[in-house]
Image 1 (cartoon, rainbow, N blue to C red):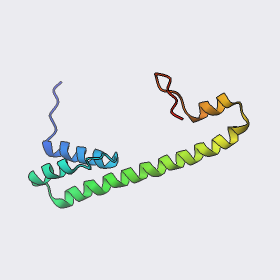
Image 2: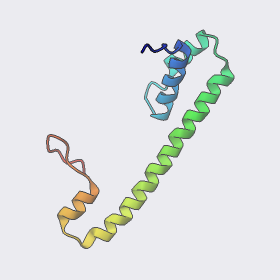
Image 3: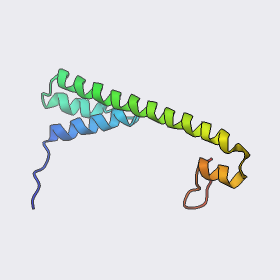
Length: 100
């Protein structure tokens, strides 16, 4: 089964969107130049930027809500043994480094 490669403009749009949504430090500026060079309209680029920013903001709001919920859970388990509270909070890295 062979796959049809994506057009370079689609790849640049996806890369721009992912960069914006993930708060990548390069901010998608390279992709902007590529897209403009390919003749992609500013309105199409603006649409991708708007959607990407929305996804980024929505993800941040959901992350904040999850943190708020977890922090309330931590208050509930405050009276539990220390190891139970630590398990509710985080786990160690593969090398044993604490992330809390």
